[in-house]
Length: 231
Image (cartoon, rainbow, N blue to C red; front, top):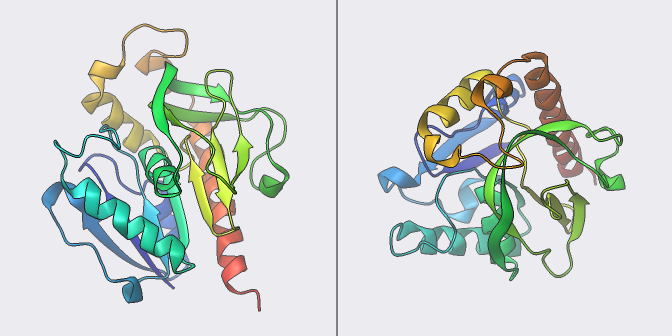
């Protein structure tokens, strides 16, 4: 299996997804869009992963590569590829599916519980308000034909699934202590006081939380891989 991922900034990569890919013998390739690396032809990958970043999907004048990236995502979905987006990546997929992206009423940064877990996440995300990592200021409307995967107190649409193989997660299951430390170091401007913004020390205080969410991400990737193997 071949996974290609789209990276928007140097400090926000695959997190725990990289270890899963290595352990499963997956071939990894990447377009570092911040370095103007080329996007791949569809024939070169089986899965497309669209990662996070501090920019907004509508900032095409500042980040001209967003136009080409959006076209790539649309083509991958139309071709029936498995497409998984995280945070900004989920917003880009939602945009590709025709949904509106807008400011969320509050920034949501830190460990907050998910609610209303969709049955499609059974065996992946616990049904009883699991704590997951969040770091976002925007949100997406639910694309036509997609189903909501979860909500939180601060954000109604925390994820969606579209035609089984296209998933957007507003929250982060791939975050490791190292990747969160990098986000904190580069995201100080986001850490203004608010009802859903936690202190960096609080966010890093409980290492076992990272193990739990990384296990959820591995279970999600396992389920997508199993879907590929279904006749």
